[in-house]
Length: 211
Image 1: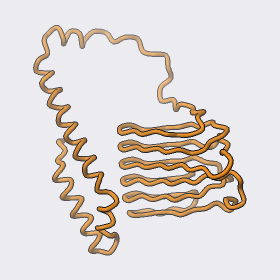
Image 2 (image 1 turned 60 degrees about the horizontal axis):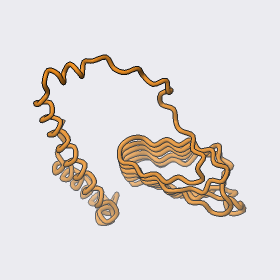
Image 3 (image 1 turned 90 degrees about the vertical axis):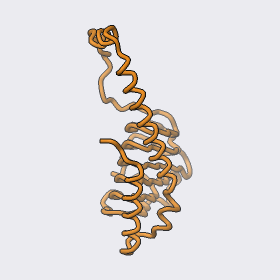
Image 4 (image 1 turned 180 degrees about the vertical axis):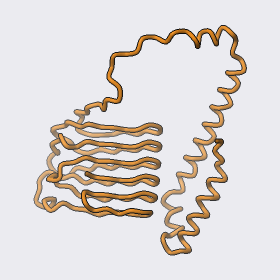
């Protein structure tokens, strides 16, 4: 199915106007915060259309020799196990990604947070094996299309600011479902701890969860 960018924008704007009229959201505030996403989607639409045109022309130019090469036996598969999440021993996360899921199994003994940005894909971070750096540490996660899941020990001193425009938000047993949801959470041992983690997580289309 061909993606119609302008049709998508008309539907999105109509939906936002409807939410504004019903009193569920402030249309001006939404546009002020998220207008760059329109350019992101537009750019991807142009990129995909251009790629499809190039692929079509290449297919038209295929010769019999190319087709025989395609039908040749594939090379032996690697012995590496599939779908294994990498183990990260780095003390900070700094990742920016456009397509695909991001998964981090972190084993740092001096973790100080970091920043993660993902456009299309899920983000899953396992912090159950880390030790925090002294003082206040910040982990900032931003997503556009996809879920974000963070695994942490319940005894870890954390402060959480989490929001989802179109999706659910959960911090342990605190759940907010629907649209334009957010959760503010602070663990009971946060103020008295010398090692603390601030988590700021936001996504537009997807769920944000801390377990």
